[in-house]
Image 1 (tube, rainbow, N blue to C red):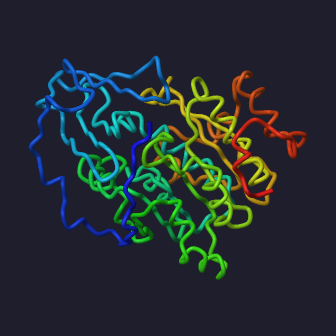
Image 2 (image 1 turned 60 degrees about the vertical axis):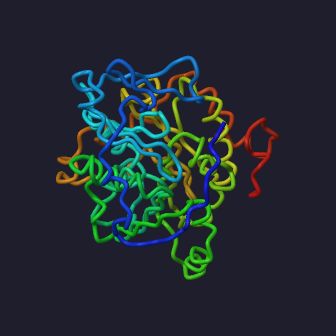
Length: 354
């Protein structure tokens, strides 16, 4: 069952440090850290029962490897040094990222939609408090404004301290504004409504969330996708973390169906990363007022940009949209024009956009 979440205070500031920083507390009772036993961390998560991923701690030692363990206002946060994957970030007992393979997720989530857009200037990042998507967005000189909406300040502070040489290195970019607020409330705020009245829409929106339980639960509801649709510029692209095809295909199908109803054009593409469930994670791409597939690049990456990549290149961009037959067959009915207007057994019953 999802946790009961406390309301965010909804304050906004630009690259400031929390006045009361829990990271200053370095005393950790390693015997009480959830998931740690006999020199291994093992995750548990209701979204994929019957399996779990385990990683060995460096030197198989809790005392030497656990760098941070605290409970924020919203979730349990753990950072440990692993034997093979570098520093690892864990939220509510589930591995989010490791330094060894995070680039496969962040590069593919970010550069596929940004390079499918002809000229992205205004970008919104929902979640993504680890900073990985932010790091990749900042590599695009054409982007002039980046807004990050993260509900949990502690995630950002942890990333700055323990992942400053990997995915937590871009928070000080002058184009960045950080808002600490529930993203669903942020998109419904009077300030955002005024922005839309003034014609200020986002070219790309990244929904970089954890699994749809706890703090991220509301970010997988149809109403949230509708809010992103309202805030998106004509021709804009939404990219959302959309789980694993091997164990979440019904859930993915629901999201594809919902987004197709709202946006009119939806695609699913995939990347590989060993610390994600089954070693695979996918993304939903939803486009506003466009029918051209995001599989085709709207602009070519410069040689300077490609030199910074560890995973992404134009060939893998296009290949990532090629899906196994069982996935393609499952999604095809919801993506086809014939499905529009039909009553389907999915999340569409909750949508308000017709």
